[in-house]
Amino acid sequence: MSRRQGRCFTALFLIAGAAILAGCNAEEYLTASLEPTQGNSATGEVRFYRVDTGVRVVASVSGLTPGKHGFHLHEKGDCSAPDAMSAGGHYNPLGAPHGSPDASRAARHLGDLGNLNADASGKASYDRVDSLLAYADLTGLSVLVHGKEDDLTSQPAGNAGPRIACGVVKARE
Ligand SMILES: [Cu+2]
Image (cartoon, rainbow, N blue to C red; front, side, top):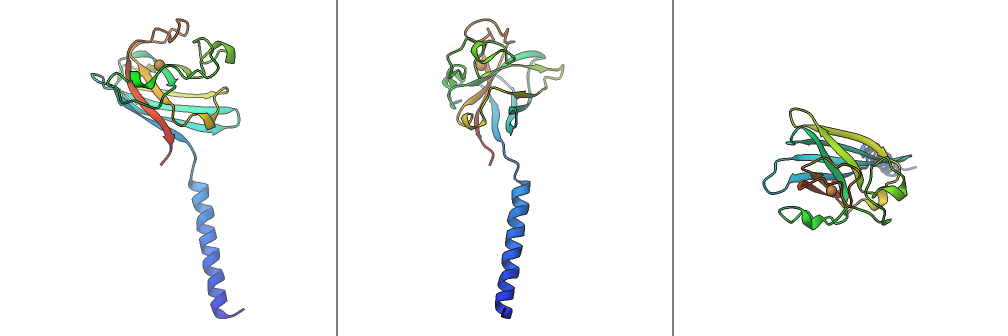
């Protein structure tokens, strides 16, 4: 091998090493940045991770009133309306009734994530693995936070009140 070829192989080796390291560091997830709707103040981030048993949903939200707030995936990735009605109804590709996130596939919307539960300072965190969601289907949906508790029973949306924050689900940048 000539000296020049040797240098070239060294360079290739370094590039391959850097690529492998970059691959190890690039954790893959989808994210939705929650922005408040008109007259509200809730903000936060929701992340979706692919796990063996489904999709892990991790949220951190602040600016809430203390207590429970309906938390759903909605069908349209459009938060442009001041009241976020542009996001459409719950993500419900199977045409099921509204329900608890722990209900069976036939008894909940796939978008039914239950409630966020804000503490006295208005902060809520959420970390749950959903065994019915498919990671590949989530991009382009939206995540909504509501002003009231989702009772997990009332149709079609748990009587959860106005939409106070909205974010579109996107690949991490
Ligand atoms: Cu909703």
